[in-house]
Each structure stands twice: as C-alpha cells, then as structure tokens.
Image (tube, rainbow, N blue to C red; front, side):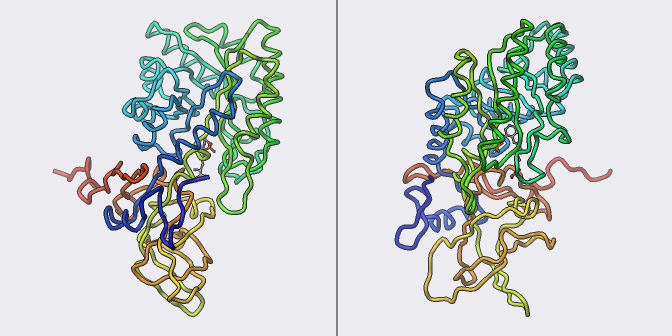
Length: 416
Ligand code: LLP
C-alpha cells in the first residue's frame, strides 16, 4: 500500500498534486512519500514483533539522506556496501552501531573507517577479506565484529542479474566451506564472530527460496554450536519483491511469520532483515514531461524528458514499471506508445507498448521508482541528474537539487 492516488483525475502524492510539484520543481523529478516509507518500514518491524530483530534498510536502493533520515528517526539500522554509503548514513543521523557492512571488495581504507565508526558487523564475503579485516583491526588495536555471508546455493528464481545466492555467483562463501572459515575466524586475532548472513537475490516473489536458505543456514548454526561457536544474530538479507505489475510477492508479515516459526528454537538469536526495494520502490515515482509525440510507420513514440540515465532499470533488466498520466484526460485518443527518453541509445526507454491518452506537454509518472531509480542514475550524455522531492502530508521539500550544468565537469581539469 502506498500514498499515491488519484483525486478527480489528478494524481496526488499524499496530499499534494504531482502536477503542482512538477510546476514547482521542474522535470524530470523523483518524488518520495514519507508516509509510504514509514508504512513499509513498519510492515517489517511489526511483522518481526515477538522476536529480537533489527531492520537494516539497504542503502543502495535509495541513498538520499532525507530518506535515510526518515528511517533513522524510526530506529532503523542500515545495510551498506561502501564507505560512501556509511558516510551518508552518518550524515543522515543514522546510528553506526546498527550498520552492517556487506559487499565483496571492502578496501583497507573502508574497513578502517567502518571500524572507527563502530559498526555493528562486517558481513564477510571471502576468506581473503576475513584475513584483511583481522589484519586491519589488529593494527588499529580494535576488534572487528564479523559475520560470514554464506552462499547457500539456492535459486532465487529472479532476473539473473539480481540473483546472488547461486554457487556460480560472486557473493558469499560456499556454505560447504563456511564451517572451516568460521573456525579460521575464531582463531584469527582482532575478530569477534557475532553472526551469520545470506542474501540470495532481489525481487523475489516466492517465499520458498528464503525458507530453503534459512533452513540450510540454521543447520550450519547448529553445527557451529556443537563446535563451541555460538552466534548472536542471523541476517537473512533483503530481496523481498514488490508488485510492479501483476506480481504477488509475500507480505512482510507472511514472510516474517515463517522465519520466526523457524527461529522459535533460537529465542536469543537476533533476526536481521536488509530490505531495500520493499521499503523504497513504491514510496517513489519519477515525474517526466512529454516533449514530443512522434509517429513512424510502425510506432507511436512518446518522447519524454527522463531517460535511461535517470531510470536505468527498464534498459538494464527489461524491467516493467507502470507509467500513468499525472492528469487523466478524455479529450485525446488512447494509443499504444513506446515511452522513450532523450539519450542517444536504442535501449533508452522507460516503457514499451503502453496505452496512454496523452499530448505533448503532458506529465507522465513512472510508478515504483523509489528504489534503484535515482541511486542508479548517471550523467550519461552530460545530463544533470534529476531533482528529488519528499512529500510529507501537505508539505513538500526539495531533498536534492537538480544538478547544475557546471557541476557536470566539477573536478575535471584542462591540460596546461
Ligand atoms: N542486502 C544485500 C547484501 C544486497 O546485495 C541487496 C541488494 C540488498 C540487501 C537489498 O535487496 P532488496 O531488498 O532491495 O531486494 N539494481 C537492481 C537490484 C540490485 C540489488 C542488489 N542487492 C534492480 O534495480 O532491480
């Protein structure tokens, strides 16, 4: 459930008309709903009630500091994958002691920064990384809390680019080797072995792969306990899908209920979630203007001012996201359009074969754009990145200025 809805044929974000936002901030523009972000966060915390838990929002989905701040105020933890993401969390008022650090290539510099900030845990993805963290922590005279990210070899049944829990993927440590790596972790100096972690993929629409992975990991937890290695938390990653079209992913409550049932035997094992998309995707839209309508022998094109540099998902994953008008109109004929951007690539589209009743100058809205939208945007074709706006009831705030042309070459230098 989200707070974008039509009132008398005009689309509203909470209590503000999106056409008003476009007039105020220009297009293309991302618009987020605070109330929706909060609702989705609470869907996880409510679902986890009764078992010790922490929801670590996956910063990569949408890393705007206003978004992070809204969640930090609710007590959220954060899942980060870089020094930059940790710096954002801190700038947003997030609590370092609730941060878990994932990612396969943590540099020594990133490890130093995270250790000094006192993060909750490093999710370690290889033996070499474990040794690096031990070395860095020891040389600083600090102790690094670690968890091993195991790769459970489970098919998440999602797009191959966002599937991470198969043994051919680069992520995590093969679950079959994990016991040995835990023993090594236990023996190495400067490490405190606190947890176990997995993340099998993103946009999962079925519950079974999560449960199969959880079962494998709980079996490993039991084996570790018999060897005297007791863990404080299990981190089940992110990955819960959202309805973009007709998908029916499990509700967080159904998902958490199944996991909690499996954790009954482990009342002290803290349950950590790392949701990104499930919190952010349907909390945001991308507002764009129709510049031209172009008709060729085969097609109608709606040429809009948002391109693949603003929203990469359709080009990269053939992702489908709803495209709707900001103002529903009856005075023009509905036609089937490819909604394409200004970027010089054939793959520059935000939607294909969409039935729309539109004219040049109209505003279109791409739904479900709050996750992996702005955060994956770029300056390709030297296009300044879009503005970002947060709506809160009847108020709206600019949470990121539209990039300026001059900032496109900031940090670049001419030859002498
Ligand atoms: N934890 C880890 C370790 C991850 O790698 C990810 C996402 C998450 C949590 C959050 O997953 P979520 O709950 O959002 O599914 N750009 C792609 C998605 C890439 C996801 C990468 N990892 C897309 O636009 O579909």
